[in-house]
Length: 412
Ligand code: FES
Ligand SMILES: [Fe+2]
Image: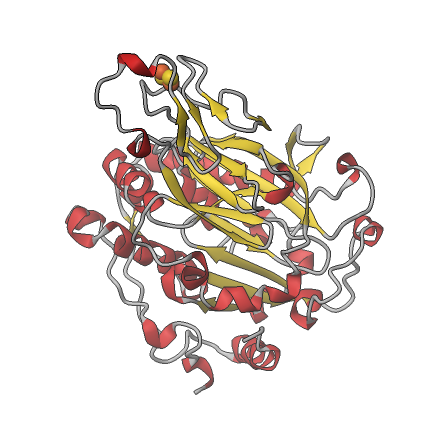
């Protein structure tokens, strides 16, 4: 189903009129603050959760032709993405089956085959081992079982996703309703304009969660974000699998900044995209704002319990000139520093981390309008497996299916 515009408008009216959380909305137990500081919990996230969820790893424009490859190490494992002869994209573990050298040393390039720089074993784009130097010196080497490990790799339009787990359902199944709701944004043709990375001194969830609520907007984004959304009319939606969405109308009288009119619009973008500030989160670490001008995802990569890498992207309909001239949603001076709105969030996120590190663990109370954060934590425990998580760090599953899309108790 495409986005249900009428229902969203009803919900905006509902949110503006209520004077308490909806009846029957569950009380959200406090989030243990040690989830943002504890090294053991960080390892569980990284080694379990990030190993079985679909992660945005690349864009087809980065490897446009057969033979083009690009390394991707953001999830903590060495991966190489390669555009194959038949037009598909493969993800391979960038680790030679001989003694572990990376078969792709350069960050990106073009190769007919991967030849290991150490002793010259060579591999096809599907990972198959093609040739071994001095093969006569190996006894019982099974060539057919000695290829590069192939990882799951699926695309949504030009977006390339990787999953390290063989049991997780397909990308489309995991995205669920989001696939149809995003159809109007024509991800098949969105062109990549920028991709940048910034190291931030806070747990990845602190930075991510600044994008899961608009409660903080009047305090720290008074001039940047506050003018583009009516937070009283904000509507949160919870999807199965930990995904969620916010939609808040752009106040009447707001005019789009001049830079936007320089770029072609996404022709099929619907009314919500054009009249609201809309942002999805895709479990576990992708935030996906969507409007008629740009598709600007942000990702939050764990890099230690109290450090993360914020990766920002700008994609847009073809703007018809060289790559350097495309739109840039998130940086200033072509990647030199994050944009003002990101800096506002980063400054606060780093300050919060310092406070949490320096003080005793407590419970963090969340309000109804911050419930997308709860949904993500609860889904993290489901992904990790509650039995693996120390009792004092667990989050109780209270926000359940009756509150997940397409159910809508608020209008019942
Ligand atoms: S490590 Fe790759 S050929 Fe030896
Ligand atoms: Fe923010």
